[in-house]
Amino acid sequence: MSRIERGGLRGVPVGVVERLADALGASIELTVRWQGEQMDRLLDAGHAVLQETTAALLVSNGWLVRSEVSFNHYGDRGRVDVLAFHPSARTLIVVEVKTAIGDLQETLGRVDVKARLGATLAAAAGWDVPQAVVPALVIADRRAARATVAQHETLFTRYSIRGRAAVAWIRHPRGPAPAGLLWFANLPNSHGVSVTRGRRVRTVN
Image 1 (spheres, rainbow, N blue to C red):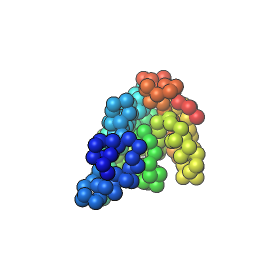
Image 2 (image 1 turned 60 degrees about the vertical axis):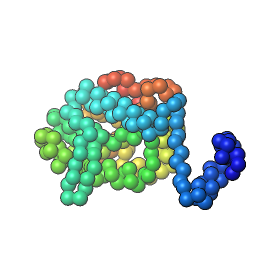
Image 3 (image 1 turned 180 degrees about the vertical axis):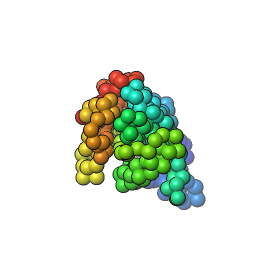
Image 4 (image 1 turned 120 degrees about the vertical axis):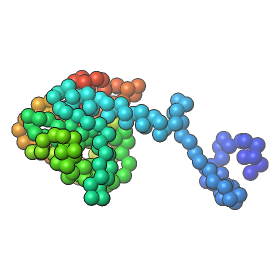
């Protein structure tokens, strides 16, 4: 306690600090920073980058795109990161952008709700009734995210078209619409950067 009072926190377990705070009727907050930035700000920035590059990819290939689409339909409420409609294919894509995968069931359940409301979302955007609604997951390419998908493969069965094949279908949406799309995209300033503008968004399988 004396060392902590003198500001010597290095090497003191977090649990010890928590117990001391509890004894004093206080609470502690830990702020994680990376290169001087708070992690929540970094995640928000990363989310925006993935959202923008995904929207650019869709627009460059003939899709009508809306970002940050809010909805409130009979108790189902939320926001779609990227909503896209291909007029000739009459297909709607509901895109969920993830910089990190947290609660899998919540994430996948949320995407399912948005896909189920596809016709309603399309109508609100002023588009025709879609013949098919395709959910899509765009995930920041990190080792932990890949491991999560691999470890819970059965939960991602719906997202059968992945990586370059998913982007190829977006560029040429012909034939039966896939049940779901999934691809990993690298963030700028990360190892092996491969997200660029428009058509040249490179993905990995």
